Image (cartoon, rainbow, N blue to C red; front, side, top):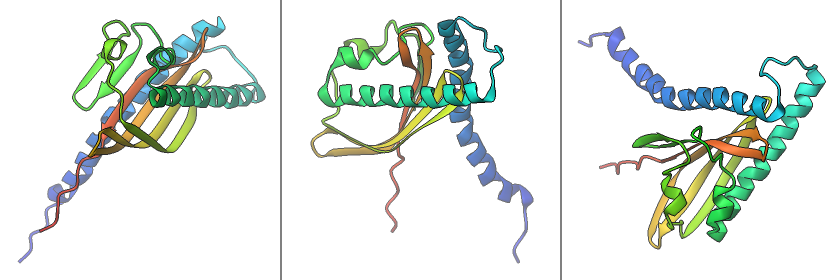
Length: 185
């Protein structure tokens, strides 16, 4: 006899929703920080009214500029150009860096400033940018990385870009390696 338990059937959905909590939280933080930084760069408040055409044109320009910064960031990785790489990020306490094991904030003390580790190979797939608000764009790509010969990682990398006086810069960066699938017996 099989026993029906609504609670047992609900657990997988709860776990799935819990897995979405961190990415949603990062987007919300990026949106709040980005709107503030973008408004500072424009010299306006986030609530400044604009026409729909102005907003659409602004979002399109933001997306194009964020994509250019995204490509610049990846080109710097491919050429192992640290100064060029670091120039794509905000250099303030509002930089948010997230990895599977830690969430850190601030540009000062960031290991990328002194670290000389670069992947041997980085293949970017499915790169996308999506405007969130004027001056704020979310970016995403899947990667195949070879940190060292014979070692391959796949995963997702995300960014939140904000308009600053220097142009579009990354204010939130996060990467997650895919979870290795277990071999079936």
